[in-house]
Amino acid sequence: VEWSKGLVTAKGVGVANRHAPTAAAARGPARRAADDAAKKQLAAELPSLPLAEGGTLAAKLKDPAIKGRVDRAIEAALVVDADLSTDGSWKVTLGVPLEAIRLAIAGPRAAPKSDTDGPAILVVDGATAKPAIGYKLGKHAAATLWVTDVPAWAKDAPRVKAKSAKSGVIELDDAKGTESTLFVIVVPR
Image 1 (cartoon, helix red, strand yellow):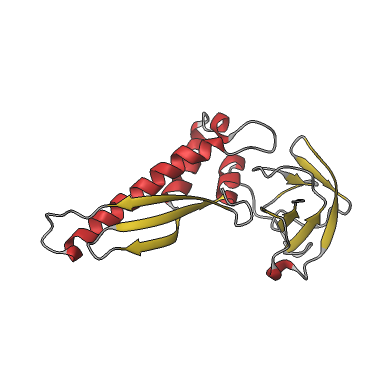
Image 2 (cartoon, rainbow, N blue to C red):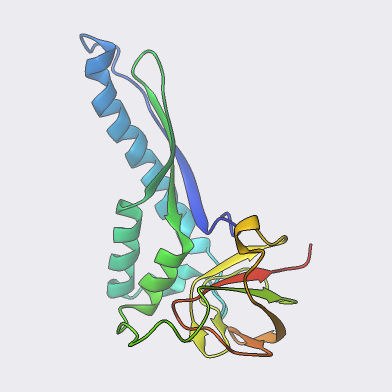
């Protein structure tokens, strides 16, 4: 789990068929095998993700609707890295965004009437919470990144101080922002 990148990643290897007429003919099946192996690793890894309300994702996967949305997130995993060997074998790294898992748990929501009421990015300083999926920031259930240092692309974003973190909620001094705001949570080292 890469909390600062917002991804859960897994690696897969697809070995080329030695009996294929050419390395080119072995590439396609080897790539599919590598992708399938990485997706299998993701499916095994995701249930252990911690939830802000306590427990892990495994408990939520008992709900068929949530399990279906998580399975679709795994099937749509992003290619983070893919290396082709000269014999037609593949090594791939696939990633599922943590935000996709949060949305799979929360389910569909109505689009807000306006997203112009708050900043696109808000840096939250002083949070004492451990990284987990599903924290609310004030009253907002929004996307989060957990970092120890503010990334360069967020250095000019507005900042807000965390007051407390309990029961899946990080209370903020000033609860500006919307559910479309990306909250960059700075945790102490």
